[in-house]
Length: 349
Image 1: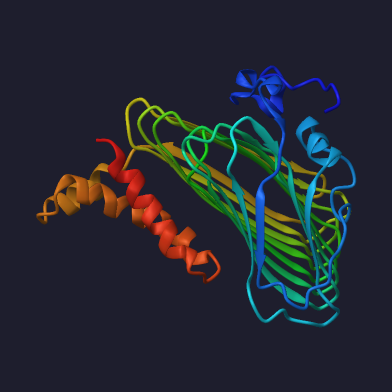
Image 2: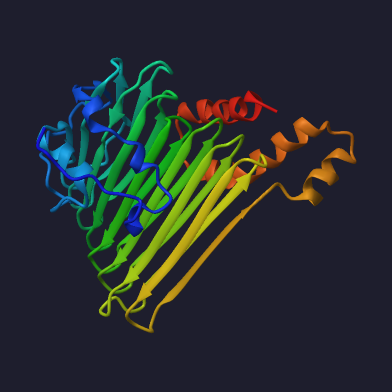
């Protein structure tokens, strides 16, 4: 592996992170065990369709010897089945570099689910990259589920590019990992392109979930909508920083950004920093963020009707996450998501 300089928490984009804890020398080159299902009839593509340059050193490390899964849809074709890409990390002390490429041709449609899995005793580093290119009027739906064990680190990147009248929907469920970070960027480069970014994350114990998002509008009449909701418990931490950037020529665009966080223990901590960078007045934009405990009125309402305190908390948390879960693409994994949230709520008092 090429000698590279790692970032530090002194850099704004790495502020609040745990990057100073990372020692790359602890890891050797390795691979995930990757299984792809539901991809019959899909052509094989190649990297470099969306991420034209590396946003940081970890994307560079991925690019040195990526483990590529590339999917290309035919023009005008709607792929009839959901494609599932499962990466399982089975060795400790390795760096895995999976790279998923989704190249959706003009007026095509595809739904892809990507899963990252490891056992709790696996101490490794996963550096995934996602590249999505949606051509004119293409429709891409992508869901990533982090089911990594409590010793595994993940530092990932998502880059999606939407051409004219395309639709890109990116969903994230993050329940696993020790330190799990994702930089998720959407660039709308064609008139009428739209993007949706949605995430559910829940950290407990000493976990940390870290999200950095960018909604970049480079063409007129584009639309983006972001909803990220998280909960932290015990001494866990979460970070969200997001930026909406609208270029001068992207008039009549609409962009919305919402981040909500529940702190379920006195030792838990969450940070939320939304930002706007707008170069034209002819737009509709909003951003909102909240960090706080469960609403006392909601808890009191349930308990006053005989609901035990621990059940009341569970109901409030499920209500908090329900609008995110309702947006997720239909999949057998939804039951696992709900089960994962229940397990988080029951781990410790």
